[in-house]
Length: 477
Image (cartoon, rainbow, N blue to C red; front, side):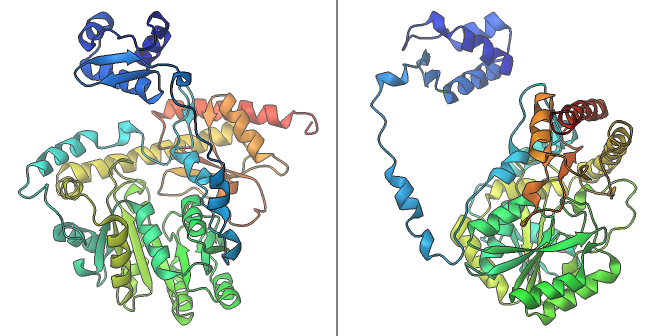
């Protein structure tokens, strides 16, 4: 599709503004591509403002923007959008830059070490397509679902969480990001502090700041959050929320140690607070991981834990089905916010999720991903030790999709990331993962979004080239 779009783009000068392009049938025969490819290429050019498509008439070269009405003056919006900021205790900051680093597709030819999802070759595309086709034929599949979600899907998530969690305590949400947004809005008023792991997921920090909350960092080590520092943070801030990723934490890969699990719950309970447990990659365990610890929610009979889990990471970025589980009065507040914000998750997607997780293809997919992620993790680890021994790798996780590296002292993190991109490899800088000033420079490297282990080796070699360029710039020699 991209190649056809580029060829058509280069030929647009043959047509006058408003002139009609050849029909789709002619383009199919000329370029020997499918009608779908032609349609997608024309849609790409239309999105760029280069062509205009008219149903039943064809595609036409767009007229220059100067031929249209003059652009209006929108400078008034600067005042309107900032007028109330001075009255806010903690001004809301909507900044998606830390999230977009892992969402934006790199340019062609660039190896994607910054991705946050499985490469298409690892996604269960055939199983998802079959599930969606079966779901569309289910009785009532296109009707209005219950606002809490399909009972069978809520039951499936409840069984996965374990403990005494029941389907009645589960809400179906449109992806983990949506569930986290609902949880933070339900648990903390604007201006309140919220305790977060440090470092932590940039998308969660963005949610908190957009809601006018004040993230307060609590350091983690190889065994997860440090309990005595968590207790100190509760006493110092009066916070009522702690956001935690106990399993394969993003970005460090740490797993909350067995001896810390009960202590963390005790500290939060004594503070009269909630834990938001983001159990985001339980289904991306590696083949050599061994038995996994249960979710914190399964050991919580008193409603301290608000649990978030999702199918998205193990399937596709477009398969946005997740669960939000809670006990007690907070569940009704979560439900109310969910209804006001989104009404419900589309029923066909929920039906497709049920079809997928109930099919024989689902456990086969999870086993295949577990083996492949271990292979990719080991390949990246070996390549880093061979080509970039200067980079510290303090922890090799047994789950998730990335490694967290500490850079040598004095390394300019933004410059290295920019130089790496020019060298043909996209990496994720560490700074967005910290809510306060970090003690050192870091990189997060994903091994799940690339096509193969060969790409991992090549990507690390390109990163080595970039590091050498940065290291030998004036002032660093």
